[in-house]
Amino acid sequence: MAEETAILVPKTMINPLDPTILILSVAVTALLFALIAFFTQAGPRRMLGALIGSLPIIPLVMFYDAIAARLGFWRYPSVTTGNAPLAWYISAALFYGAGLGLVGWRVIRRFGSNGLIVFLLACGLFGVLRDVAYSLSSQLIAFGTGPLPLVADFLCYISGAAVVQLLMYWIAGPPGSDALARTV
Image 1 (cartoon, helix red, strand yellow):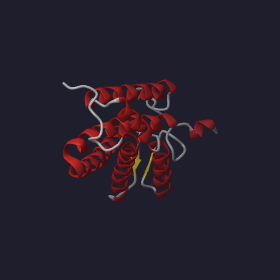
Image 2: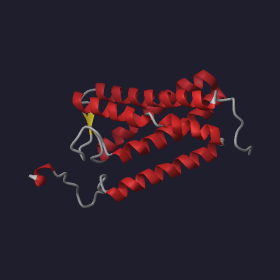
Image 3: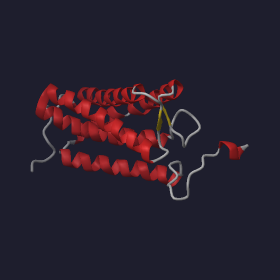
Image 4: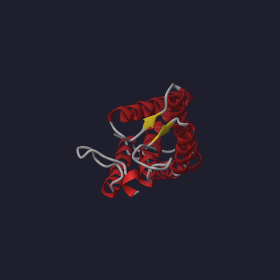
C-alpha cells in the first residue's frame, strides 16, 4: 500500500521533499532576502515591515493552493495533498514576499503609483513564467488545461505582492518616509 502512494522521483532528479533540500531552500531564500535588503538600502524598520508584511503570504498561498487543487488549476505532483511542504511557503514568504517586497518599495519610492502598478504586474508575470518553467522542466507543479489556471496563478502573485506592500506601508510608513540605510 505504501508503495502505491509513493512518488517516484528519477535518480537524476533532486527530491523536492527531502528534508535537507527543504531546509536548504529556506536558508537560500533567507540569504536572498538579506542580499536584497542590502542592495535596496532598506533600514531596520523597512526590513521589519517587509518581513512582517510577508507573514500572511504563508496562509494566503496555502489557501490559494488548496482552492487551485480542488478546482484542478494546479497541483504539486510530488505531494499527495493540495498543499506543498511548509518550507516551500516559508521560502515564498521570504523571497516573493519580503525580498521582492523591498524591491517593490524602491520601485514605488521612485515611480509612485505607476511604479506600484508596474511592480504588481511584473510580480504576476514573473511568478507565472517561473511556475510554467517549473511545470515544463520538473515535477514541482502541474497546471490544468486552458488559460484559466495561468490567469489564477497570475492573480495570486499580484494579490500576494499587494498584501506585502500594504502591510509594509502600515508598519514602516509610505515608501519615501524613511531614509535609505546608506548612500552610495
